[in-house]
Length: 129
Image (cartoon, rainbow, N blue to C red; front, side, top):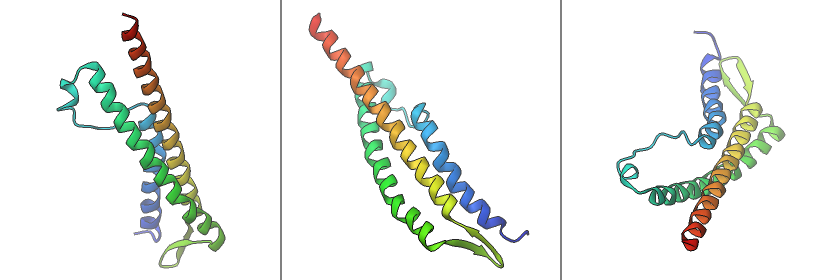
């Protein structure tokens, strides 16, 4: 094999996951089991979505926060991943992973706020009837 191939592939897979996560979060395209969800009324589905995106906001915040220190450290120490004589800087991978985590946080927060606004609108609509 070509030296360094596994280093590049290993790091690019992580970056691809982190860069794809915001899009999937924004478009609500995550894979989920719908055994219970499919049997719920519309309001129940909305409530489950609010809970799920609330948890996602917390998770993506923690993920973003935990990537800040390693990203700064990779800048200051010039971290490298190596295989044989092939050496590759990890800084771009840390930066892209941090951006992916932050944008995932933004997408989850956006969906969370939209769903809460929809629930409030539905709640006000019931009060008028």
